[in-house]
Image (cartoon, rainbow, N blue to C red):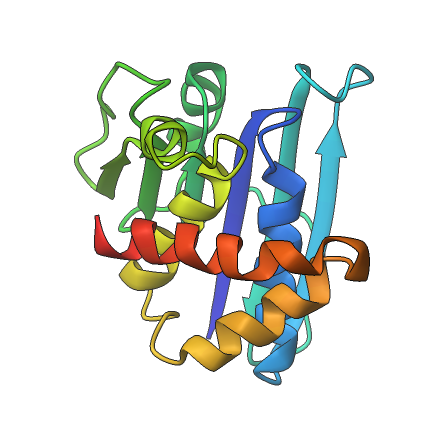
Amino acid sequence: MTTQYLFAGFGGQGILFSGKFLAYKGLTEGKHVSWLPSYGPEMRGGTASCSVIVGDEPIGSPIVTKPDVLIAMNLPSLDKYEPSVAEGGMIFVDSTLVERRVQRTDVKTYYIPATKLASDGGIPTLANMIIMGKVLAATDGFNDESGVVNALKKVISAKHSDMLEVNLAAMRTGRDC
């Protein structure tokens, strides 16, 4: 089984971090993975997207054209990528920043007020991990919290090791909302 993910939003929202986390989670589970970041020249505030493929077989191409799972952190990302999601796929939307509803009826949609939850929780930079918690919960990837912790340890630098528990708490918030 292979699942294609597309994370999209503005630079500075943690799009690439979320994708890297998911890729490492796949690696720690013995899966084949591909992680392909893409961002505009402005980085913070510009466009950012990240393609991640996790599968049981080797991955031939890192390009995601029909994502099974779309994580849209802003309206331009939802507008651009909603039509490309595979039939029967999932779309996760940061409903704090995206007011419109998904138009498609052949996908499962999750509206998570991630930016508001992050702000209210005193962790304004972790809306991405709140959504990631919901993504994992919806795709049965949050069964083993130790796998989540192992992946977080891979993507959080030693310099910021104090952020491990904060990221995990943000993911639990997303899982439970």
